[in-house]
Length: 144
Ligand SMILES: [Zn+2]
Image 1 (cartoon, rainbow, N blue to C red):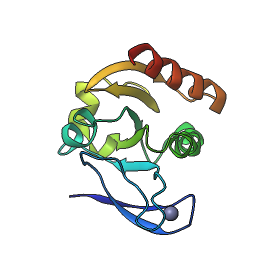
Image 2 (cartoon, rainbow, N blue to C red; image 1 turned 60 degrees about the horizontal axis):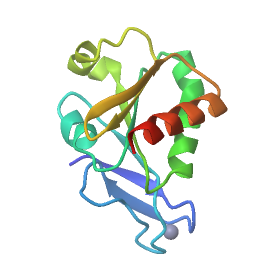
Image 3 (cartoon, protein in one colour; image 1 turned 90 degrees about the vertical axis):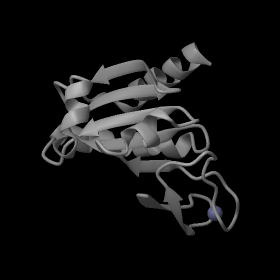
């Protein structure tokens, strides 16, 4: 399975984190929750995102997309702030034509919040950090 290297924000240790697991990733050294940031595509989206036991923030992006480059660090920051409570799943639309068509992705970035495999919020286009933070928290709060 596809793994990501996540640097522990607490102690700086690099951890290999699986894209999907039943538990939530913790640092092997200090046991701190790790931000869970992984890539997914047509083949593994179901396992990585839809079957996730923690809320998922999906980022549909592309290499050539300028606004995606602005949003990406904000999403990284949210994943760090919510380590243990959120999984950030990045989908490169050029590598995932079936997902793009299934979700009708017209503009990128498109962001979705998935809880237990259901879309609870969706937003297209870039937005400032505080807007995305309250959008994300509102989506999760409505469901939990
Ligand atoms: Zn650590």
